[in-house]
Length: 193
Image 1 (cartoon, rainbow, N blue to C red):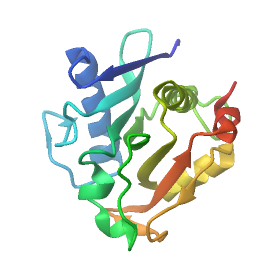
Image 2 (cartoon, one colour; image 1 turned 60 degrees about the horizontal axis):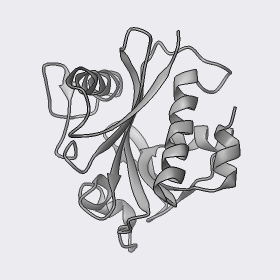
Image 3 (spheres, helix red, strand yellow; image 1 turned 180 degrees about the vertical axis):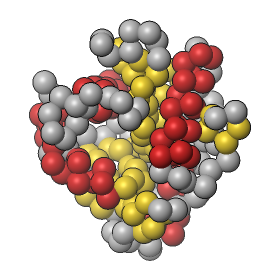
């Protein structure tokens, strides 16, 4: 199966691919992780799916979406700032055109693994966010994520460190942290083939 990585902003994404992203997010966040999210017609979306959002996503040969990221600028509203500000402790939410929030990372359950730690889709999505950052002048990503993803990032050597109050928080049933991921040579090496 070939994996095609695509990138689009909210206004330009083809409707079937956008629907595929929302369907995958429903499968991962609502069904698999059992997050308490509003959904309709087996699709998960929220107020951050708007004209500020960009999407990096993976499609297979049949054009089915099987992995995705949502990217939001920190110069406007984004999840860490407006939904999870308590995770920041005394720290102020980043507001910088060169810092972008990553959210809604999802990979289909049936993605085949290329090694013991990552699927081909996962690695291609991480390569894509690195390349996107370099091409757009992004110096750092921030994300609210599970400790499982934090462990994965450390295992593949993507640079990351906790920010905010640096504590583990239970968000729904998911033990979560706030991470900063600087865009640097270590990131490039971690995601290079």
